[in-house]
Image (cartoon, rainbow, N blue to C red; front, top):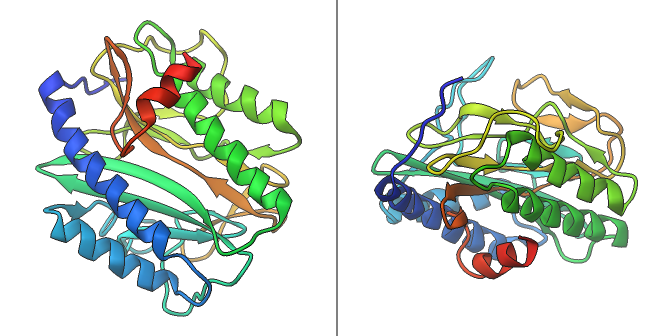
Length: 266
């Protein structure tokens, strides 16, 4: 396995791409409301990324049937990841929508995701979002020099499992990122503490837990992209790009407050 190791200067360049992704997600999340289509969200994201000097990472990514045609993945309710935005998909009160976004600036990628409630959602769905987002921060805090790859999945899964009966998606997960969006290693959302390769400064990962309100199983639809829960129950997805540095994890796609949040978990 060959891991791309970045210099501090290259990590700063990745921070530029990461900040553009974070700003785009904040803009799109604020636009989520009943009656909005997922394609409207996609247009908003593309305009913001291009206006900020970036290129959408996802457009043209090869797929089993067709290349990905959009700036965002907008996965609603039981859709876990990779759903293509559509003018026909109108968000309804009580839905949740996972918004996954990537951008390239000067050849470097940023990648992040957030799941947003559409108006008021059921209490168990609201709790699913809280648990999944917190599990992401547990995984980010485990991205420490001298640690092991398995520490990340262990941190995610042990937190989720302690909160109740949730399904942790295992077939999809995090990944290395840098001059390409998807690089080695694959980072599962389950793991054994102390297992796997050693983590070192200059490694940059996208950490992305996906947690289901029901069973952990997944099913891919005929479009070759959309992944859904096997039982039709909702799923949440949160993601950040994080650099491992001698000073600790640096969350490249977060806009503010990330240092304090990481410090609380170290």
